[in-house]
Length: 117
Ligand code: FAD
Image (cartoon, rainbow, N blue to C red; front, side):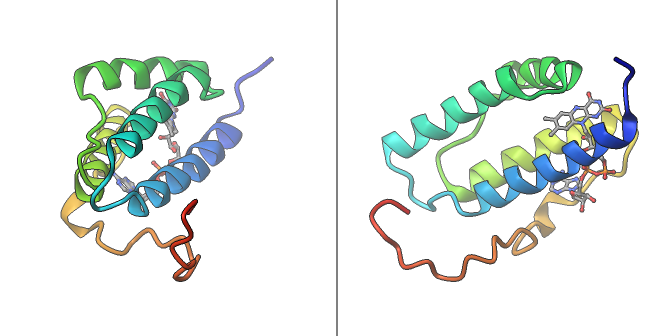
């Protein structure tokens, strides 16, 4: 099947939005289990992302810069840098990772820190 750059870019935008929003909600003080879960998430993501070339590049990136899981800030900073590496490769503008602050808001409100959430 032919490549469709529009669909590929749309998937990329939706995925980055999800990933950045996910780490913006990662605990500030993660447990060892939280940390393992995030690390395994990105390893699985690198295997499963449906754009094969993108996934292959991302796996290379994970080797060079392993996911930072020690805190929300560390994880958000790491993902921002990883996205910037992709931006550079695709000749897109880089994002100022110091300004990531509240840029990614899930809109979930204070979904009452339930034990499972
Ligand atoms: P996107 O890069 O999708 O970014 C969306 C928005 O996020 C931007 O408009 C900006 O507001 C914000 N943003 C930008 N940079 C950052 C940052 N560093 N941190 C936080 N927020 C930021 N496409 C390919 O053609 N080849 C590839 O090899 C490829 N690899 C990819 C690998 C992964 C893991 C993913 C998720 C996507 C990949 N893509 C790839 C898609 C590509 O990265 C873009 O998503 C797509 O080209 C659309 O680009 P865009 O200009 O809309 O902005």
